[in-house]
Image: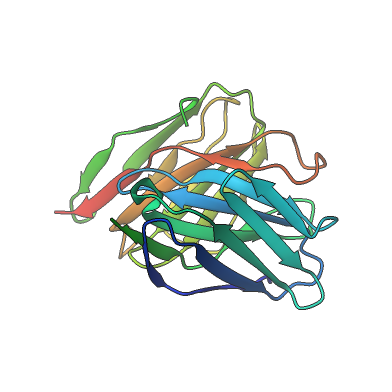
Length: 113
Length: 116
């Protein structure tokens, strides 16, 4: 089955700096890669996703890049703010009809004021 | 997500007891999922259902059971056979049935289950 590895597990940045979180996946047939943000005591919230037919997608301060050849994808947050502090999860969708998501282990992002 | 309601928010289980976690949605989504989240780990899939009256085991189904009698509801029962049930349980939904292609999953705010 699919295996998703996520790095780093913790990340601290100064307010205004950029943050980058990286994920690798094992199943070359995976074709959908969402990113979720989870605040304490809440469920994950989708912040951006990318499909395998594009290499990059941007939404204001958030961008995701995908390298299908290397089987890795990354989340980039620019101009970080304290409210960006949360746990971020990457995921990859399986190629079967059930389209299951396999999640990375999460990155605790702390934005220091 | 406002359209997915999980209850209760906190639940305590005694030894040998079955407990049921509720998940209700008003998004008219076909697919529903149950995940378990342990500290410092990602989400692991327990069960999923793509249509009413059908459900499939995920990666860690042992000690759990589900039903899908209505489109809006997908309750999860944690049985006494689950020896380590303490975790944060998340319900998710997704638009479309089995052949709808990749769509994002939307999550409720979870139920935290603890052992007494």
